[in-house]
Image 1 (cartoon, rainbow, N blue to C red):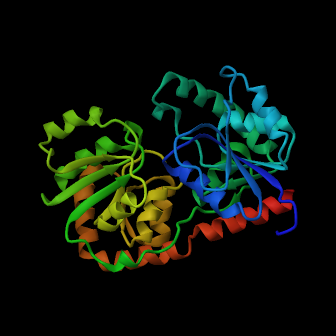
Image 2: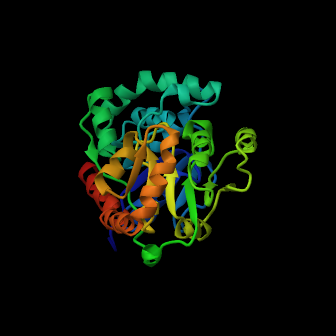
Length: 346
């Protein structure tokens, strides 16, 4: 768009941090900055902002649950506002009376929320989100599971734009010499970490569990000691590239026992490295395994050992399916669809 003024787009998220939504926003800023003048609007920035992108930090509340008028005034300066869910950002976008798009990641059950504030915000979210979704000029669903949920929850027919990956890695065809299960995501009870640990004794003794992500492992240490798994469970904290890529490349397969996921981006990231996945049979995670045929789903932790054997016996076939699925789910295609949507609304 050389010689033309780029439309100004505010890309809004609560905390911009390591994790699924933060990764999606990072890729959006990278892929759309050539066509649009994109600005990150976030309550707090905890990960590197892509080069060439302006970032503004502003609280969504003043105080909670009152919307911050400064945020509303800020969003009026843009031609389009894109909210990655976030209750406060969505309320401000509606009040700004500018075209706005909401990407829905779904709402995790309130009982899974950890703090009192998050539970209160969850209750407000349940009451406010249906109207906010209907107020948006367009709603994007990140998976078929979320699209179906949106129709029932808010009566909204969302545009389906699945998430993506940066590309299939050449190392995908190489079977690892060790059997380490890799979990990538938040280290918390609602992500089913305890069930992954409880399921490990049902696997052969040479199987280990690597856990990568933000959160404290303290609440899980007593269970590890009780099950005599000290040498088989490793917490790595947050890993940036290329350390995260190395973790995927060296994994036998990825795994998650999360109680709720709208998509399950680490599963797809593992697919791009040719890594099959073992996941809880729920939501977007189940959908990915069903569509790709690149892994197994469990309903109880004692099934994990059996599915480790299934993956081991069929590793090459599952790895090939994983890479084939990742090939058709690229960030380039994801944000080409977003670009088309944004142009239609500006």
